[in-house]
Amino acid sequence: MSTRIRELIVTPIAFSDPPLLNSGGVHEPLALRVILQLVLEDGTVGLGESTGGETRLERLEIAARTVVGMDVFDSTAVSAAIDTALLPTVPSSHERGWTTSAVEVACLDAQGRLLGRPVSDLLGGRVRDAVPFAAYLFYKWAEHPALDGRSAIGDDWPEALDPAGIVEQARLMQQRYGFTSFKLKGGVFPPDEEIAAIRALAEAFPGQPLRLDPNTAWTVQTSGYVARQLDGVLEYLEDPTAGIPGMAEVAKDSPLPLATNMCVVAWEHLKPAVEQHAVQVLLTDHHYWGGLRRTRELAAVCEAFGIALSMHSNSHLGISLAAMTHVAAAIPNLDHSCDTHYPWNSADDVIVPGALEIKDGEVRVPTGPGLGVELDHDALGRLHRRYLDSGVRGRDDTGYMRRFQPEYELRLPRW
Ligand code: GKR
Ligand code: MG
Image (cartoon, rainbow, N blue to C red; front, side, top):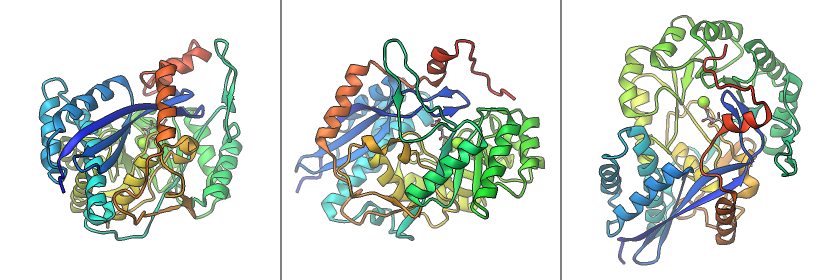
């Protein structure tokens, strides 16, 4: 049996996304991802999934040239080789992390398939059989409005632009997936309106954990105000303001724990964040922390410094959900339910249906070899064709918003 890498196939895809609002604008009708197939000399294939966009795609193509001939069980060396290849043109370790992470997941999937063991076993074994996820609530338009001769594009979720709309969305999320915790993407409306939405959720779902994430839309002062208003209502407040010093300033007087997936996104951010007591909860994300094993190591660092753990998500499909589930299953100190965009995007998946299901707010950890999911080659071909035909090559929430509201400006902080 040869465990050497013969080829890394990198396929950009585009899939449907509803008009979800955030502090930077609104999601476009198509979101981008890249699917990896790591082919070994014996024909075994390991899968990976990463965010899309031309720049990240080019880096994955560099990785594809770098890994040929390497041993798939040597995944630390594979990551190091990719890191070295990117170093001259990509100074940010966070940015290089996006590439090394995607390939590491594909290596682990291939290893698991060769050994007949699930990826969670390769990470030390699972400490839970099912991983809890939170309903990810967004303010949203009823549909993507008609534009430049294109008809309006509808979806399965009604408009949500006020507290009643958010509560209705949360009820639908609960009915369809059984979620028992909720995260609201904020930074869209003035803070008092978002405070009202959280209070409405608290009344509708008593005792069920809630969190709010305005993606740095607020000043230090506004963040403090919201934290005091929602004391005893939120389990944590996520990225209210920008940067480690800003978060540290808010944390000094905040009655609520502060969480981040924005100011601590690389290893070198941990030391200042700990020294300044800037965050009490870290949202991990294997897509940029170096992969699944590095995420488990990150969990141990957080444990050492008393930082609680949750998990971040971006618009994604099933290979990512499988990877998130395996690593979350293998982390003892996962303190909060994980984020996932999957309900917004799962209708357009590239995996064969049936392996992953969100039920009772949880995903059961796949027990088959590797990640436990299979690629649907027809779906991959269809979504790749859509990528090629669409001409969309990057995410631009602000530019898309301006197509409908030309006066819209990206301002952070806005309030
Ligand atoms: O999908 O609009 C979005 C989110 O705002 C996403 O881009 C963030 O990365 O979900 C993320 C977060 O928690 O900050
Ligand atoms: Mg966040």
